[in-house]
Image 1 (cartoon, rainbow, N blue to C red):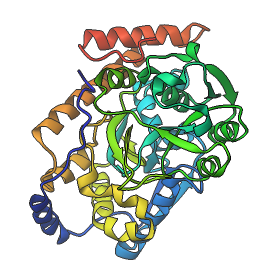
Image 2 (image 1 turned 180 degrees about the vertical axis):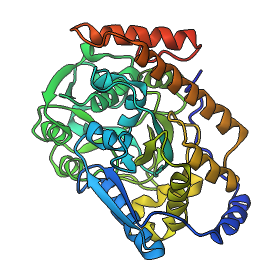
Image 3 (image 1 turned 180 degrees about the horizontal axis):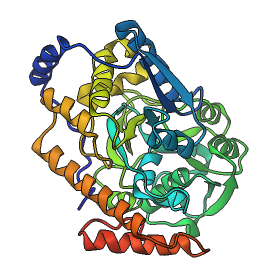
Image 4 (image 1 turned 135 degrees about the vertical axis):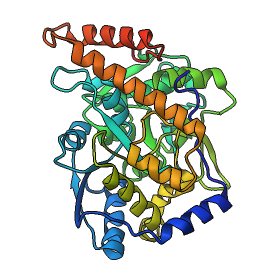
Length: 384
């Protein structure tokens, strides 16, 4: 199964130290000015980007221009068009590569994005529930009020995945339409909804709910519940098992069995210059100790936190660096080749679709996409 293995690849400590020492003598060679898009000001992605930019300036004299963007399209398309070098993106890039959900539109379609590296933190993406809603398991969501964020397929999919974990669908709950992520949490605060997904380290609205009379409790998704996890990953293949020790109401003494995905995810166009990509990854890798001092949550960029078997293919420039660091395994290579093949199959299906108009466009595209993947013996997630 294509996305069966989503385990984080960790380096052997001694090997990593030797590789790191060997690379330290090599100078990072980057343009004097680089640019990447990120989430809006105040977001984790933006904060990480600014902290990384400062260390790149201090260490190498490189100016990193961070461009905040409000949605996945405005973060991704400038990178594809080579107007911006990289994007510190979120899980929405998975949907972009797959050409599904909000990307299944004539003017968009599948995007040829490749990974450089990512931050895998000690937090997780969990379902936060109001304590007074008495939601102790995912099955308890039946009959509860859940936000549906209009125009945000990524957030909609996150909630749908937790419903699937509990063997439920949207038909089993009361859908509450809201305008955005903050509005969803305000709905919980105002007793108009009962649960919503969030990273455990998000703060802001989640902190408000936690401090309110309703209270906040994170829903555990025990790793031993394999059938539940299989249903969740059928909806959201980018979700991987994780134990969170960082976040609101969490600690090493109060961990949470949960799931998550990398964030931010540094991506670039598949045809981006390999040397630029390699040196970008190298610069971030070498400076993580420094920028994590200013932004502790950014420690997830460290070499031993990289996931080389996630759902996006790695850029050849990045692969070259990880090979030099002796972190890239035969298993990672085989997984990457499968993902590159998948991207080729989806892109070819899109290019071969002659008629990209009409009200039935999305249904036709999803059928064509599923047929192409099936013919290539690849997983047909999001077949509808």
